[in-house]
Length: 405
Image 1: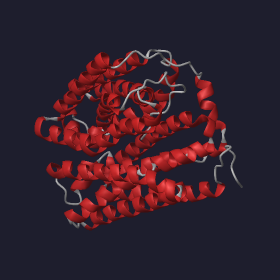
Image 2: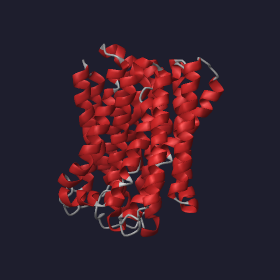
Image 3: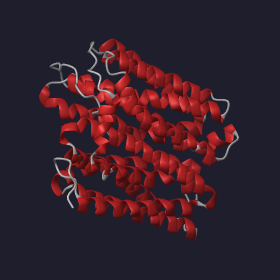
Image 4: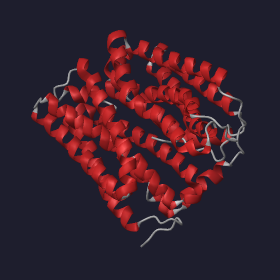
C-alpha cells in the first residue's frame, strides 16, 4: 500500500539518521489503523446505528473511494504548503474526522466523517514518505521510506486487531476515539520536533494524469483494482464471514492478527522475491494462493465444517497473498514509466483504494447470501486477476512504456 512517493520533488535533504523518521512512521500507523479498523467492529457498529452490516460496510467503501479520488487532487492543491504545516494539518483533520465518526448519531454523519478522514490520510501518507527521505543522509533514503511504509504494514498486523479488541471490550466509538487521540499526539510531536521544510513546485493535475494515456500503464493498474477487490470482498466483513467457519466474534481479533502477520510477511517477502524471480512470477503465486485460500474458506463455510486451526492457516495465507501484490505491481509500473516513477506509484495507491471500495461493495451486496458466496466471489475475482495478469504479462510493459505485441 505504499503510496509514499507521490511528491514530485522532495525538499532539500538533511544529514540525519533513521530516528528522525520514527514519528512519521507512527503517523502512518495511525492512518493505517484508521483505514482498516472498521472491519473489526462492523457488526456492533451496524447494530448501534440500526443498519445492516452490509450497509455499515459502505463506510469502508466511502473512505476508499474518497482516498482514491482525493490523493492526486490534494497532491496538486497542497503542493506548495510547507511540509510540517501540511503533515500536522492532515493529522489534525484525521483526528477531527475520527472524533466525528465516534460521535456519529447516524450513518449519514458517519459517512461524511469518513470522507474527511480519507482526505487527511490522502494528504498525510504520500508526503510523510517524501519528508522521511529528506530528513536522512542520501544513503539511508530507501530505508527511511521502508520505515514509513512499515507504519502501514504494522497497522495491518497490530492496529486492526487491537482496534477490534478495543471495540469488543469498550465499544467501537471508544476505539475510534483512541485512533483520534493517537493522531493528535503524533501531530503535536511533529509540530515540536520536525524542522521547517518548504513545499514543492505545483504540478498540474492534467500533467499528473497524462501518464494514464500510456497503454503499458493501463495494463497494470486494473490488476491492482482486481487483486485488492478480491481480498476485500470478504475482508471488509471478516467478522461475520469468519463466524460462519467457526470463529466467534470474540476470537476475531486473533484471526485479524494472523491476517496482519501474513500481510507483513507477504509484503516483505514479495519485495525480495520480485528482485530474484520477477514481478509476474510473484504475482502468479500470489493470485493462485488467494484464489485457493478464499475458495477453501468458501468450501468450509458451505459445508459447515469448523476446523479453527485450518481457518487460522488459511487466514494467514489470505493476508500474505493480499499484500504481496504491491511491490511487484510497483515494479511493473516503474518499468512501464520509469521517468514518472513517483507518479505511477501514487496512482497505484489510488488503484489499491479503488479495489478496496469495489470489494466492499460486492461483499455487501452478497453478504445476505452467506459467507460461502462472499468467499467464493473473492476467489472468483482472484482467478480473474490471475487471468488478467497472464494476458497483460504477455503484452508486457517495457521500460520505455510501450506494449509488446
